Length: 502
Ligand code: CP
Image (cartoon, rainbow, N blue to C red):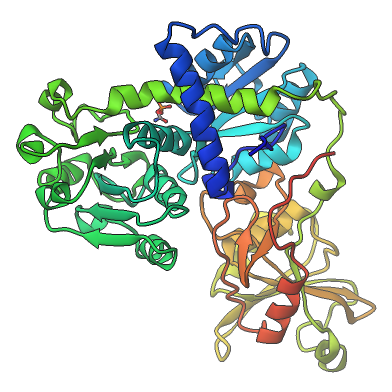
């Protein structure tokens, strides 16, 4: 297979085919073999004129340093930041503007981590140069999956088919289990066994998806039961930073039965993997395991260099550098999130538009939200009329105002307070335009951060509406939207996420 990674954005492991995963594993093994033969710097003049921007908005030890090491061994220059202190992010600079500065400063590729889901797809949309996702919120961490796959490939006789793997720790709040298991679903005869408390267990939707792709998923009572049928045990850290209303003490209690200690691995010929870091207080892997032959997580971490070195090389080996355009793609100015509604009835009856000759009606909102929206938009302060109302027979709020045309930021604020609002613009006492404004309902999605100005965009994933950025499914809850209108809206959406360049 020839490489098709030239200048490609690396956002989700689910974007890779089986052949591409195997290709990158082979290339990663080439990098591993160079290291084994004392030749780690053999490629050090290959990307001598290229530069990596390392943009880490969130803490990282492994991902950041292994990108840097991989780049250094390919002869690249590396610069960037680790934490936002010392950057203009402290002065409220957006992701868009910060990413643009990397192209403006003649970097060739960006490796970035950010706490918001979907922020890396947004960075990729904005940048002229390719972007690699080093972790976006609780969403994706594709190069972690690549290094996990490479480690499995190496220690499973260069095969991924037929793997028996155990999962433990936190299968619910992290990104590694989801990404790795979905990547493995490309391969034949995969069996996943897992044991964990319900709260930390495998999400039902993930289990269903894996099973629909032919993966056998088996929940076991105990870690020792898992160990009986596997070759690799993939442990993960409880992701406390992504949990709500749970204390570390409660998690430690849940983990008691599931921590990996010598007793649980005794008699088993397994390799214990872990993306790291281990939480030293929870100690999901007991320190004595570190000295046992089952310990596989430090070699696994080194495979991060081989996987990232292979990826950077494949992305940058062919083309000349990309010149900075200084522009954003036109596609990024607006979302594709306005579900058009017919305007007939209102032109006749005018129930919600009476007393408005020119203005806006915001309708089909939750109880009490109309006042909140009027206050949030500062309508009265800006000198506009604001008439909030509640209809108990329909259990809905609505708001009339003589402000005509809401900005995207105003529309987002409304949709965050009350999802799927119907917006009607009134001209000459008639409804001139009417639409339902859709905004991703994932609280941690980059599209919901109003001042980032990320357009609300969706795509049609075989009949499921998904957010372009965090890729979460979108359920339209506005009661007035008919099946026909929903179908009409979906038919206009792109069928997949295409790369956007200016
Ligand atoms: N595995 C991993 O992503 O580690 P860091 O958070 O240290 O990058």
